[in-house]
Image 1 (tube, rainbow, N blue to C red):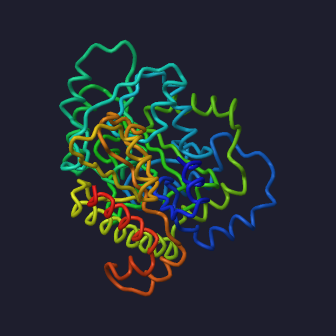
Image 2: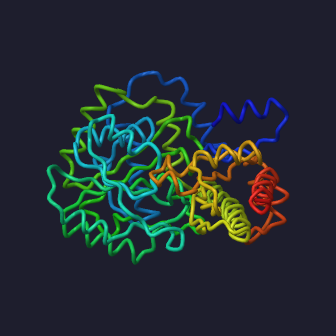
Amino acid sequence: MNELASGLAATGLRIHRFGFGQSPFSPPPHIVEALRQNAWRHAYLTVQGLLPLRESVAAFQQERHKLTYTPEDIVIGPGSKELLFLLQMVYQGELLLPSPSWVSYEPQARMLGLPVKWLATLGPSYAWQLDLDALERHCQSIASRPRLLLINYPNNPTGTSPSEEHLASLAAICRRYGLLVVTDEIYGELHHRGMHVSLARDYPEGTIITSGLSKWCAAGGWRVGTISFPKAFRPLLKRVCAAASETFSAVNAPAQYAAVAAYSGGPVIDRFLNDSRRVLSAIGNWCCDELNAAGVPTAKPDGGFYLFPRFLTKDVEMTSAELCDQLLRNAGVSMLPGSHFGRPASELTCRLAYVDFDGTRALANANAIEGDLGFDFVKESCSSVVEGIEALVRLVRGI
């Protein structure tokens, strides 16, 4: 898709890049300064991770989400992606995935020779929440090996989060069947209202949390991820550390020391997160409203920077991949097909990442405005996103 987009751009076509999900912002300056000041550190750190960093992560989770962890419960890795892979490798369980889910979960399991079971969700009208009846039916079936449910929210690709009532019901099912759950909460701090709730609140004894700096701190290239284990799963943590010692050895030292400054929080981090959420909420809701008004059902985003629109056509047979190809060629809009995220190829869903704008400029503009940000802000600060959505809507209405 990127190669096709670049080729079309070379012909003069205006390309609206809604395909790649990377934070549009830059890390807070004092975090960058902490990285610079620690650039001289060249020695290997411990496999489990720098102790002050693990202490900061534990304090961060306690302060913001009322979750109790000790530094011994936490492992630092080169991004949460690698930690998820190692966890699957040492646990050797059947992977349970809601459909849709992020693109790398299933391939990781397949690379490890592990079975994958896709579970039904309730669709855009119900924020793509997991169908709990489907989960319970599968848990009642005979299992030949342990099972691991992997959920991610605010969700990539839908931007939605389950309700607190849904999480409580999910926790009850997981407790009834002793199900191990991994919650990928990499977008948790980007909940648009700052109201992210971890499943670990309702199911602390069986929930493992992964997160990291890539999304909320806009530091994806630094590759700092975290994984937090309940105390009962300390043996599993030790197995992950053993696997880490034979693979990545340790996360680079300068980034770990800089991450301490990020997880230490403070007024600068609070303001950065608040303005990031306001910007992403304003853009996401405007994009969602425009798509729904054009007859493209799209669930309202709760956090992160994704939408998962479903396109409706009459008497036209195509796959979601073919649809994305046509939207790129005819509207200059680059998106990813829903089939990459576990949806049927015939369902014309696409993931739209609304990050094609100058995040530094948008944050500066937002900082000068009190309260909610309206369309005037979106048009002024995120014009490239507006132009892309308008091009997409024109094509849809024309069809």
